Amino acid sequence: MMQQNQLIMTQPGQPITTQPGQPITTQPGQPMTLPGQPMMQQGQSMMMQHGQVAPMYSQNTTNTNVIMVNQQPVTARAAPREWSTGLCGCFDDCGTCWYAIFCGYYMLCEISQRLGEGRCFVYFCPFPLLSLRIKFRAEQNIKGSLCKDYLTVQYCYYCALCQLSREIDHVQRIQRVN
Image (cartoon, rainbow, N blue to C red; front, side, top):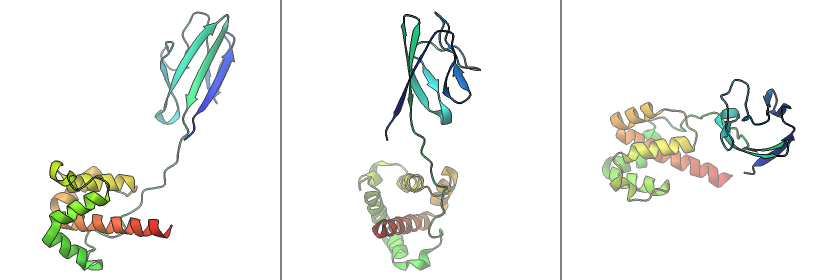
């Protein structure tokens, strides 16, 4: 992503506007201030929209202040989606269900490999299925919460394992089509 830099030059005491409705005023020998904000010192960061921090650099020359504001573009994210299959959707793919029941640990290693964590992740992570489920849900913008993920893995381990495998397959099918 490309960053935009704004260069603003003013005379001391004159208000300037970097964003609509947010003037920055400078006084000779005084730090820069924003309305409703505490005093800012030279080299301090200023809070921008959506919680972004823009580093500010000020250089005093003879009666002219030069202010550079580094702005980051804001990207929109689509609304969270549902899982493609339900937690008890094993009848849609009985082979995955049997694989999870009889070879669940190997299936978990395979899922870890498919998600880019490697097979050793399962050996060294204390809660590998929970971690993989949270990672995948966050990457794919799937509805849910940490609490729901924990309870699902805790009380429906094999169903959660199968659902994660089916969802990975679903995402890979969509990616192949596109």
